Image 1 (spheres, rainbow, N blue to C red):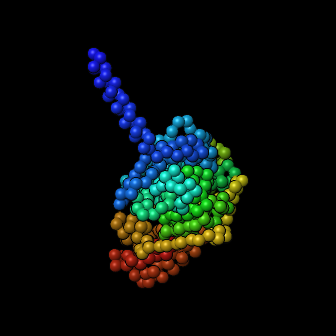
Image 2: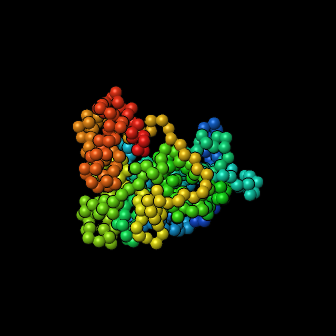
Image 3: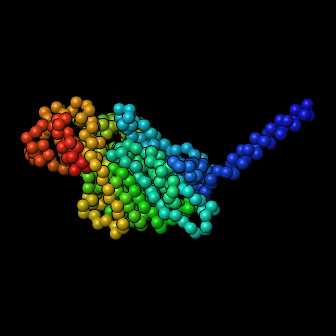
Length: 413
C-alpha cells in the first residue's frame, strides 16, 4: 500500500513539475490592466517569437455600451490567457453567402514581438507597426493578418486590432445621442493602448507606424487627418485605399440609422428612443441590416462607414476629408494592378453583365455609390452616361470589355 502511495505521489510531483516548467516557459508581461500570459510561435522560416492574442483594450461594447464610444477597460484579477484570439466583431463572411459571424464583445488586439525587454538590452526598444484590417468597414478581423513572414528577419513589434463594424460601428443619429464613427474611435482607443503599454512588449511608443489595406488604408488616412489621433503614431502606410475613395466615406447615415430602427420595430421620432430601442434588439439582426442598402450585387459594398460628425464633445471627423489638413509625417501609398476586379467579380460571375447593360443608369449610382452625393436624378443619369462613354465608348459591357469594367472600378476605388 505504501509503495502504491509513493508511486502516486511521484507521478503527481512529476506532473506538477512539468506544468510548472511549462508555465515558467510562457512569455508574460504586465500591462496597465493586469498580467498577460502568451505563447511562443514560429515564423515561416522557424524564428521563435512571442505572441499575445485576444488582449482587451476597451470594455465590451454590449448592453448600455452598445452605440457608445469605447469605454475604459477595468483591471482583471489573475493572469489573462492571451493564447486565444478574441472574438471578431459582428460582420458578414463573404465565403458563406454573407452569413453574419463574430460577437458584439470584440474589442481585442494581438501583439507579436521577437524580443521581450528582459531578453534584450534595457531601453533597446523596437519600432512598432499597428495593422488595421480591411473589409469595407463591414467585415474582417485583426487576427487574419499576421507577421509570420514579416518577423522572419526583421525586429519590430507587430500589433493587429479589431474594431466595431457596419451598423454597430458606424450608425449615427446625427446629434449628441449617437454622433457616429464609433468604429474609428475604437481604433483610436487601440492606438492609445499601444502608447500606454507597448514598451513592455519591447516596442517603442515614440516610433509607431500605422498601416492597412483597403478599408484599413482608408482608416489610416482618416487618422492622418483626425484631431483625435494626433500624436498616437509617427508614420503611415496606405495600401489600396484612402479617405478619398467613394466607398470609404458615408453620407446620410442618420437617415439610414432611422430606417434600420423602423425595420426592427423601433420608434423613429427622436434619437433617444431610436438608440434605447436598438439596444434592446438582437445584435445579429442589427449587424445584418446593412443588406437593406445593397440593392444590386452587394452594391454599394460599404453602406456604413466614416462620416462627418455634426455633434459631440470630441469629433473624430469634424469635416469632410478634403477639407482637413493631414499631419506632417512620412507616408507611403501604394496600389496594385487590376484592383477593381474585387468589385467587378460579382458582376462577371453572377450573370450581371446583361443586367448592367439593361439597367446602366439605375445600377451605376449603386456601383459607385453616388446616390446620396448627387440628389438630382437627371444629373445622376447624365453622369452615368458620361462614365459609360468614357470607359466603353459605343461598346457594351461584355467579356471582351471586362477590362474596362475593372479599370473604372479601380479608378473610383
